[in-house]
Amino acid sequence: MRAAVLASLVVVASVAVSSSAFGWQGTQTCYPSGTYLCDPGEQPIQVRWKYRCVGYEINELGSSDLPRTADGLIAPEVIETINQSFDTWNQVDCSDLSFVYIGTTEDNTTEYVDSRGCEGNRNVISFRDDAWPYASTSAFALTSVTFDPNSGLITDSDVELNTATHDFTIGDDDVVIDLKNTMTHEAGHFLGLDHSQVRVSTMFFSAAEGETRKRDLDDDDIEAVCTIYPTIEEDRVCSNPPECNAPTDEDRGVDNGCCAVVSSREDAPFPLILGLFLAIGYVVRRRASSQNCS
Ligand SMILES: [Zn+2]
Image (tube, rainbow, N blue to C red; front, side, top):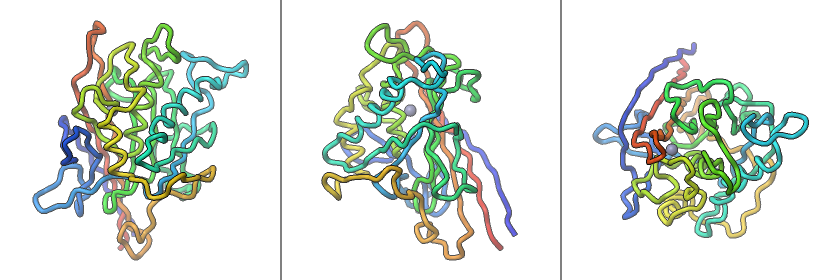
């Protein structure tokens, strides 16, 4: 019999996970509780992808704020902007993490779809034009990372861009909310990073209108990705789509093939008014569900 338990927790805080001289922080889970904040004696585990080749897809509709084709689909230059954001992380020499653009999709799912199996779940970048389905309408974007709390291995990452209440732009002219600036930051969450304390870093938690400095990585961001995904294989070549990148039951430390705990974590920066700056707020929303066989 299966029992499902749902719980929610809101934390307004930031927790230092890294112990480096840098300011970056990894998204963590605690073993064995699977919570975000560790109890005494618990082991923090870095949330990360199992394999270095990680695929993503982009919702085919894009946004009405941004260029579309004559058929009403996302324009190639918008796709290219998103791809450049992921490529910024791909180009770090001391890491062999490789994001792979698979293509566009009708899907805009933002959770791990276990019923589709490992091959069918998608990591999707979507635009929310009609309504922002979260309380924080001031957020530019939100990345949901679903992972196995026993192993820290990610099963799914999805990005939602808040085009319902913000004007996104691409390119260098008349920048409002720069898509590349935002997506490079969200790609950091996508790979398992939390917010950094370094103000000039891509993973700093806030951004102002017109900001573009997060398009390029700071040394702090590079230290982060190279610590979590140090180069194992020079000149790694990924297949497209990449191989299945989800934890197995062996990874999870279970032997009956049916017990798993999956957590989803969402966070976002909040801009303040007047274009002065910047948001100083950090909200972690966490949903945890467990399935037990007995
Ligand atoms: Zn963020």
